[in-house]
Length: 410
Image 1 (cartoon, rainbow, N blue to C red):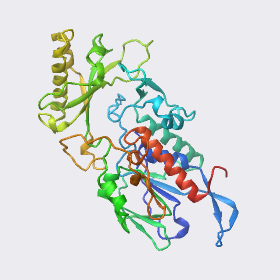
Image 2 (cartoon, rainbow, N blue to C red; image 1 turned 135 degrees about the horizontal axis):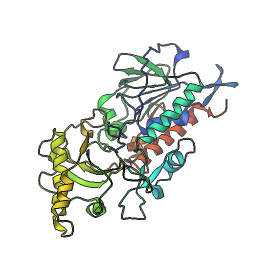
Image 3 (tube, rainbow, N blue to C red; image 1 turned 90 degrees about the horizontal axis):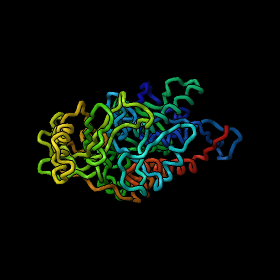
Image 4 (cartoon, one colour; image 1 turned 180 degrees about the vertical axis):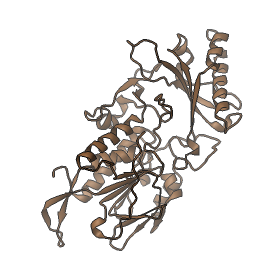
């Protein structure tokens, strides 16, 4: 997972140091905006707004509140490349992420079909290395281009920089205040964070429109209520593996946390031997239904037990050997998204919120177009999935490009 140097220096109030734009949020959407606008040029004008022949490179920064980039795209912390986030894309139905990222010749993203997917038309697809590879590859591309420009730290991207307030100045520039007390000025600010979290953590001066504020407060955040649990079994998948995972549904049980299960095993070449292979059961859970909500080991055992109980209706699978195998996992990994401050405002949810639906108010800019809003929840076509994160980023990129007369040529 990429981290960056945090070289906090006051930007002061000098107009020459005012940035063209600031991106708030270092998840997929924010990084796609950065990728699309990095190394672009702006046509400059004189005091009478007459276009001059010279251009200059866009000045920008990205501030991520947490210590790592990626937002809701994260793997396990042991390097096994286990998705602990939203893991899937659906190529036949998601042209935006396919064209922009998956098929990009410079990023080199590789994919594989979800094992055991029973629905050929959906072509449920995972990313080799985990969905966080989108983030890793984009950051490496930005870093490479920064090194070419003698910026070896890619200091345009800074982590551990929560934004707490934005203020519109008399000259219509925007002052962005970090929790460190630093204030950075820009002509435009792009928020690429969950709208509900934005409404709770950032103050706006002047206030946003009532329509925008209400839409943000009432919005649903993708993954906010979900705790993902991965049970790891060393060795290749046993022959019965596809049978126990049919359909991905798991029988609900009283005080049992899981509501979906899938084969989370990382990609391995069919021609390779079984050395080093692992089989993984990955569960989507509502952790508050576990016997001990804050005990990761107990939550993992609860998921395994619920899986065993789900097999009781199928006589073919109801064997002690299979149950013993499921209970005998070698490792487990738990990601409690509700406890991530900048993802969820409810640390112990008792229900999973409905999937986000398109809301025009979430996508609409504010402050005469100087405040723009990306992030998957703001997408008008596929909110709440990675396709939406990319789609929202492209929409904002176009909006800003039109406002700034951006050029790709030096």
